[in-house]
Image 1: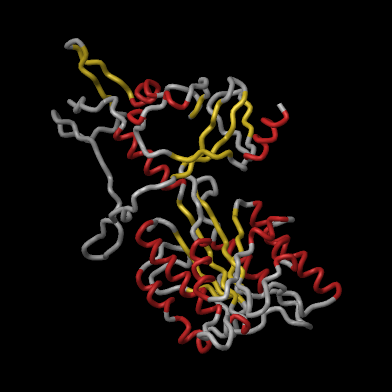
Image 2: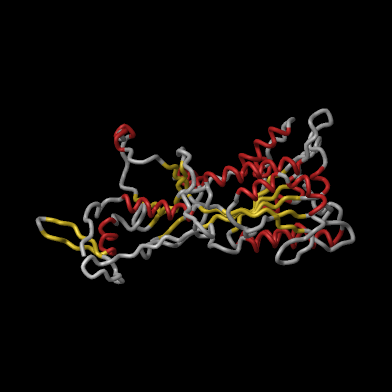
Length: 407
């Protein structure tokens, strides 16, 4: 059996594999938790302006995000969940939580046209089909926010946090959900809710809040949500978006914050033989490309799975053994196994290695082979290195600046 020797050492196939791995590593699963209490349906602006509600603003923002996602990041998965509702719809049968979905779709799945179309019109039938109520009231032990976090965590069970980014995004204009409670009941419910959030974060889930300020009342993060998502000091001030005088400004800010900066790869940057730093790379500017083509069955309209088999030219038999490639050198055929090819292309045990320093003018334009990526120290600790006995330090940029200042 003969194989085409062209491109034996070429990196084109490797680039395709890298793109697939990067896509899987950058895959994102998001659960949108939307507050459906009566306060969300009150006018979000002053009386002399167009009366739009915060609920209407959130629906528009999520609809816009789904339209963008279905074109540019079609492999991401999303779920929409309301809390503080009259009706309940979730696998855990928890009160006050309604997981919104359409037919022929999993609760956490890729967005489709039917989901976007029906969700954009949900305001017309929300009160009659789902309903709105105050979930946390005096005299009741029911905690709808706790239930919502539990349902969201259950929706994000599938997939590993090593290859999938998982987020819970909360939309609300109520800065003190336990304000109607007093005494030990309030303390206990706050404690259990924060503990539920920390348990989810320990599992690799990211919890984010998109606060909405009511007219003439700024959203106060320090009352509860700063502890829920783990903010301290100046982080609270920087986290709050400026409310602005127009609802359009708030809508634009929400759209920007819903788009998360996602890393392209995580690399081990070796400074010495014994010390390396884990860094993340981020794409700066890239052309927008449509999503990957998905082949469908002409009868059932279900996605098809492509499989490839090697057949011997001489016997026509299906080959089961690992394939070998060859390269003609000096009129001789030199055979390589897949493992040997991988070892040949492997230059170092680390992804990046510091070789030294040179002036910036030594870097020429023709040295640029691909679009550049921004490198930033990772905040996550990791010990997954190829070479044993190597110390990996995961430090933030502030740590590096402090070391440079003191040295």
